[in-house]
Length: 359
Image (cartoon, rainbow, N blue to C red):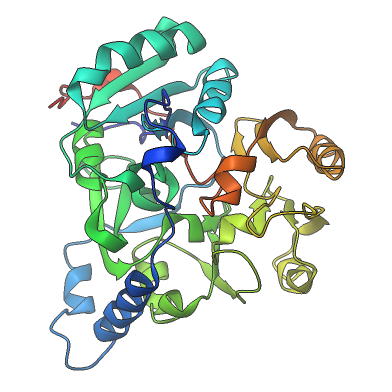
């Protein structure tokens, strides 16, 4: 069976458990140290993993999926800590035409309530709710980091047009396998520890990552061969948690946004017009860059600050339909923003799936 496209998922949450029962989603110092050690070990001569041999079972990858391309699904997890429910509700209410909302949970008992909630916001025909079998985790809400990154596969007989890359996520809590089964896509393994929020790409295969310590230990060849990057740019870690989606935003084939002036020269060399966004005045982890672009509509985080309007105007100047969403609580707890808790996948026909693999 050949699938015409890939899956686009975005996790929406009801807000069953808000901030009180959740810990910050960022890795602890111990987890960060373990991630660095893991990645450095993989690069050592004595380690048993054979990169060249792994490529023998890896499909030929054309390039990564880009957020500037047409999306078919918006995905997020059902949990909604740190007031994330209002972000997810706003996304559901403003879902672009032709995009299906995909909400997943590891709790089968929540499915009926989730279905009623999101169908009321997005429309009955626009919502899929799935109970997936994976290890429960507070961090499941961080969809950008722990779900598979979509990639476009080179054309081959009896193979889907799209696949996805599953990297190792710290703590081992990731629903990658369950989502790949649900969508019936080919899942490619990246054995290094890597967070999806630290990966942005355009339609030409230009890939940007922030070169924080653990990521610096991942060879360029992994991004070229497994993710399909034609060009890899490693940006210096200058602020925030060290994710590319905090600092850079592809808008279209010609334009990229950033709030980091020291990146402008590097980004210009890629052939892009670089537009500088303002920075929020307060909060260590606040950023207007961590927006979600879906089919010409952009969901921009705002913080009830004076710079909010300038950020919104900057996005509108790019010809985008802007929906602003307050992200103060989520961002100020070091948990990212709109982009971090969502994922998008390419357009595909759900009728081509053999069956839904509900738990």
